[in-house]
Image (cartoon, rainbow, N blue to C red; front, side, top):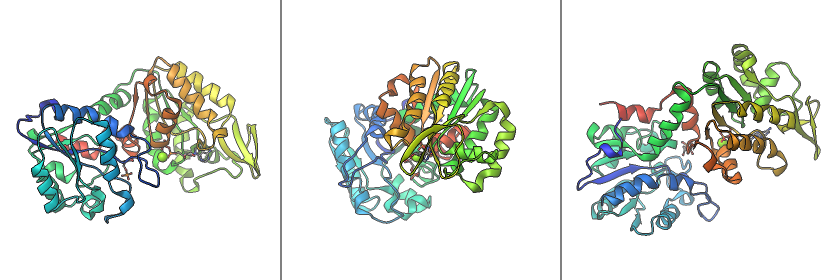
Length: 387
Ligand code: ADP
Ligand code: 3PG
Ligand code: MG
């Protein structure tokens, strides 16, 4: 796979796929620009070489039609703040005559941000004609949208195939993500501890399963823990359990044996009352791992050489259920191990605690991060490897 440094950029216009799928408030204001900042090394490299950059991104899930609140216009404004020395323009079209005209008019060192790719049905459909129209807007192609690389969508898939292998590459962010995640996937330094939590059990069982052979310890927290506890016929009260996945959870428990740790105590709630206990019965609902579990997990993290973490340990949106996640994050920050963290809400927790610099790597990916860990590659990266 080629990287940015392998590309001949002389007199070229670069078509760059970024992931500017950022959280916004109701007025469209960007609430967290970390994904945008993560793309700056690639953009700066191109701009310093006086390359004209046509940027493409998706935002949210508009379903193939224009949705005013999901326009990338406010994102273009935010980008102007991040790159104050460069002219940044926004095109109200994704593809079409206006986009072509604006791309052609772009001078070296200028940026054009196309409208939300997902306003066009061709994006999700990986449509060839749409990919052709996008490809026509640049003469080299750079994919720096790590967080979207698990999707077989036109901008990361069919569009890449339109470029000669010498004229397409991954950007700096994708390079950095792969380097960090390969430390977990390929011959990780042992002992390896993997921590999984959060709510999306169905999406995460595959990745938990992939770590049975790789990890020395698998620590489970968050709502996910109750599906596993239920699978062991333990009482879970009215906690969130994914009944449809109990068989899969049982299989994992059988295969993993002692390697897999479940919470030994919980923070639970009923009718506004909150208490700690080791059994969740009746109408009680598990909301966070308890202090004994947190200590046990922190200890396991402390003795690891490599740690990977995805998924909060509790319902972190409520301050009173944040402490389990905070204990895990602190143990990661204090650890001298290689520490790699990813996931939407997990990333938010890391930002809230301000420990990002104490980690080896905080991935920009959600689904892409999990799929990379489970499969060791992603569709959009495979396509760039082909000739
Ligand atoms: P990530 O985006 O980091 O991969 P998920 O999307 O899987 O994580 O899960 C995050 C969500 O899990 C959070 O919104 C959090 O409220 C929820 N969650 C975690 N533990 C619990 C719990 N015990 N009960 C209810 N929700 C929980
Ligand atoms: C993400 O936020 O994980 C990526 O931007 C991909 O978004 P998607 O799940 O809507 O494809
Ligand atoms: Mg999430």
